[in-house]
Length: 115
Length: 260
Image 1: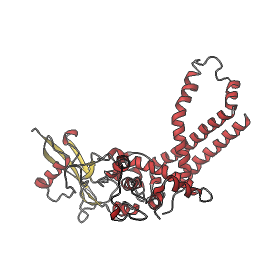
Image 2: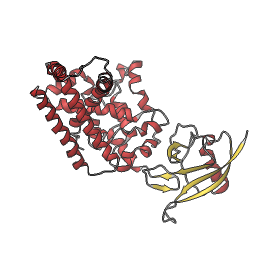
Image 3: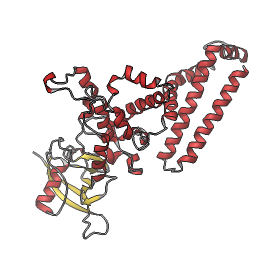
Image 4: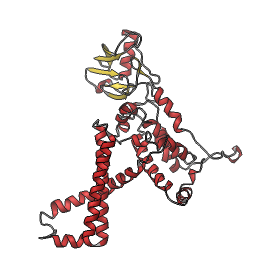
């Protein structure tokens, strides 16, 4: 039997799962609860401040890694979940899932270069 | 000892006379400490001697008496009557063809088992005079859990992926491959990857984890498969590094990988 090429997407899936498990709860806590509750003061996430932080090159890289890997994690997870739900049209599902991940990854990269 | 009476509903099928499987209910007087296998033995001994099923050790060692009990894959010698209600449903293991009554055809798994080479592979055997291959407790701990499999195949009956695609090598066989990959005496991982790293190998698994939940010996095949996915992913990338760099990294970092 030929070795599978699935490691390409599975590697991104596994990396995305790990990074999102660590980062996303903290991000939700910070951006979804603490900032709106005013814990970090008024205007903690004003456009100018957010732009300044994300525009700092090391932070840009980290944000890109979190966003892009999480996207690929979600894409692969949704593909497998479709399979578990009994949708057997795997090729179309795979194209849609990974296609979306590619498009949004490109958007994130373009957004990052525009800052 | 207290006694209780249960209704035991058993799926019956005789390929010579039955067009389709059918259900038969037996009323069985049980002792409090009985397991489902005892109740089935009672049926065989006192109510219907034509009932067919496999069993041997009656102590969760031989792995022959696996069946679906109230829809869940269980060893019938490990399923206590007292943990169930008055009615207990017993069927042959899911995802396998029925040979007769509770006996299933295991040919598919038996054919897959030798394909992953579940034995120690070495480039060169050490001469006997040089003594045994020694292992530290840590090296033993690395694989011991995966060596506890008794081939009861409850994991195959629980695995939704195997139910969908019987080409999937499946949990127990992959866990056994992993057991030898993790053995400090073994050098055969590259050979096993021909099967385990194929699409029908670890990559057909979607990590539902049902295999590990039903395993009566705590082998945790799901963990074995995930660890193999990580290893196969590393290998996939290493194999694609230019100028034989991947091979050099493999032989430096993983010297136990040299078997041709």
